[in-house]
Image (cartoon, rainbow, N blue to C red; front, top):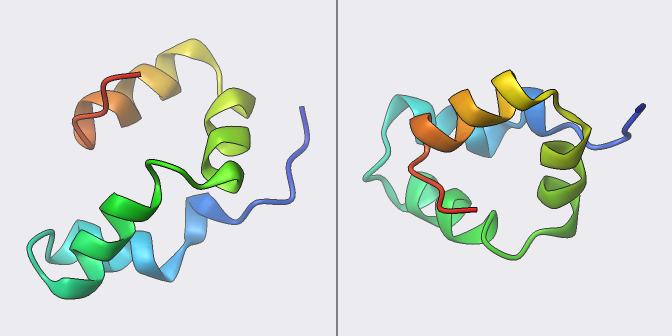
Amino acid sequence: METKENCENCKMRAKYDAKPNSFAGRFWRWHINWCPGWKKYMASLDENKRAKIKENYRLKN
């Protein structure tokens, strides 16, 4: 499944990865809870990669 979302290379995601407690990091983490692009991105991943991301970012769904 091809996706147009750039979530893999998102600058805000990189800021979260570098400093999760920064304002930009917290904003990105809040943003992915409702972002339709993030949902499409997650749906486009295989199950193993999706599970790794869920674990890394402590996602429930």
